[in-house]
Image (tube, rainbow, N blue to C red; front, side, top):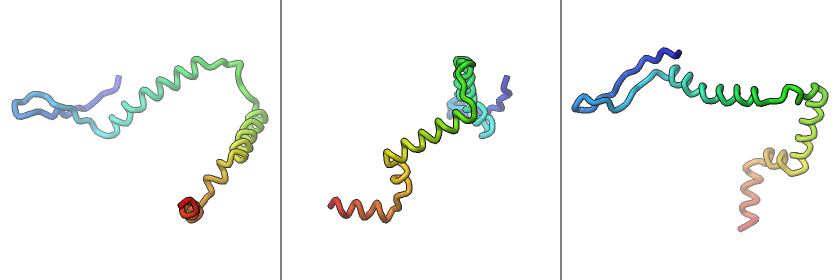
Length: 91
């Protein structure tokens, strides 16, 4: 179990309003749901469903090529000057 040092914030009538925790504890708490979800995803994964390194390289090259065809690479490389020129051309 996670040991959490807590500082209680109280109102004028000494009733608890909030709890303060240090940033490291907060970040560890934030990590729990992500780790849990990743663990579930791994459990649900079919161990027979895998790619060799060569298959993975081929698959990612295909994805890259498809993105280039869709203009994604061109869009990312566009400079702000090109973007501003396009805006001026439309007006």
